[in-house]
Image (tube, rainbow, N blue to C red; front, side, top):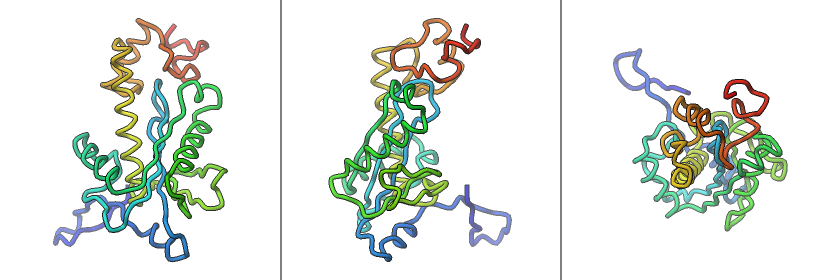
Length: 221
């Protein structure tokens, strides 16, 4: 995480830097009429989809407090989700657990990002993508931004949309498969989740290619 010094007389005092609109303004100054931010949620869990969001912010209506979803509590994410959906152009897409198993998590993540970007109701001239990879389909008009959800407001907005959407999906999935407790851990490899896998085995929404679910992995045997 990047940090900046405050105006405090105490030189050791620092606060986390917040994302801003600098990268979007730079691209617009070069001729891009609108810029989208793209981010994902759910690369690491053992179950559920990976979800991507593409967001074109309205520069005149950027929600107060917009930040990397990981820096926000659930109440703040829900509030910002509603404001982003109200004022921005948004598309959300996903790749299923079955797709992740078939093409691997990296390719499935890029596929979900491409689906989200392609589904925007108005085309973006440039896209800022969190991480090191830009989907090949828009590589010529995309920029990878490492740590982008903490640097770029459009990516931060996308991170919130993707996170809230996926959490809601996993909560609904928990109603169908309550033994796993998806609404508590969202499919991540918590002790509770691993214990449920040992007791009940995987469900159709688990990622069978992930350790420790893989059949050749001894952890759950």
